[in-house]
Image 1 (cartoon, rainbow, N blue to C red):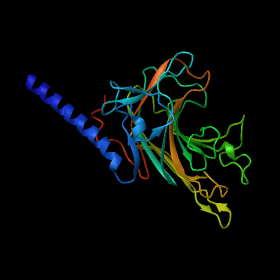
Image 2 (cartoon, helix red, strand yellow; image 1 turned 90 degrees about the vertical axis):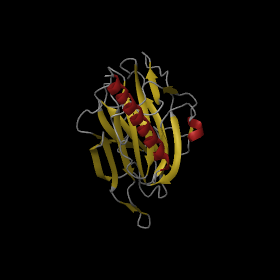
Image 3 (cartoon, rainbow, N blue to C red; image 1 turned 60 degrees about the vertical axis):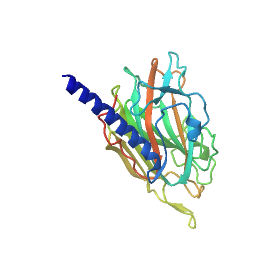
Image 4 (cartoon, rainbow, N blue to C red; image 1 turned 180 degrees about the vertical axis):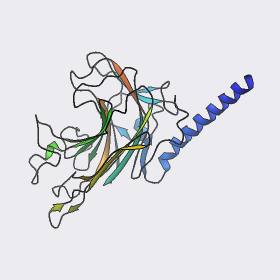
Amino acid sequence: MIRYSWLGMCMAITLAAFVGNAAAAETKAPGIFFSESFDDLNVARRGWYDSSKITISGKDARAGAGCIEYEWQDGGKAVGSRGLRHLFKPTEVVYIRFYIKLSKGWGWSGRTYHPHMLHFLTTENPKYHGPARSHLTLYIEANGGKLRLGATDMQNTNARHGLTQGPLRGGYNGKLYDSKGPLLTDANWHCVEAMFKLNSLDVASDKWKADGELRGWFDGKLVIERTDVIFRTTDFPRMKLNQFLLAPYFGRGLLPHAQKLWIDELAVGTQRIGPLPSSEGRR
């Protein structure tokens, strides 16, 4: 019994080290802009900006030494990490991979909107621009347990060709793309991936095509796919994606009760990154 227990412990330690090393290696992999394991508080040294208040949890990590923790108290007060941003080389196609875990008994907003979670912004807005009213903001989040990809472009109200993400309603607009059914339904770690590709432009003819793409994967399975999306018009011929914003957020009065979420092993690049090599090392 002692022999087998010791062998099992050694195998667990080896597996954990393998997963941790694999995650670290992603930083140098072809097509990767940046990756983040949230193992310590020194995120500014790795290119993150716009907040110095974050909480790293060492006991809840999916892999490595830690993960970032977001917490809300009753009444909706955020007491954990704040929003973080990271710039990357401008691109017309972007992929993201991250792991997410919700606290036991997690509750949703009860509305068709919120919480917001992860975002991409473009070169058409400055590095500190808010996500709500921009020339284009892309969303990766969940609503009622369904994985959701979405886009808004409220700042384009007075642009020559107008809005691409639907009319303003109550001052907001957006087009949303959900998985068929709830996926985030437990308190375990899950791998979420998404991709966005901006649609084509013919600037000389002042035309654009409905050929933008978006896809979402949950634990390696494709659950959202569209290849007919318009993200931009010739009003913004040089628009590219260049900014990532991590900012889980419940609107006023929408938090059902005190709860937490954790995010780990995040990576952004120009090709699909995929889940970590093994899921057996999860905590």
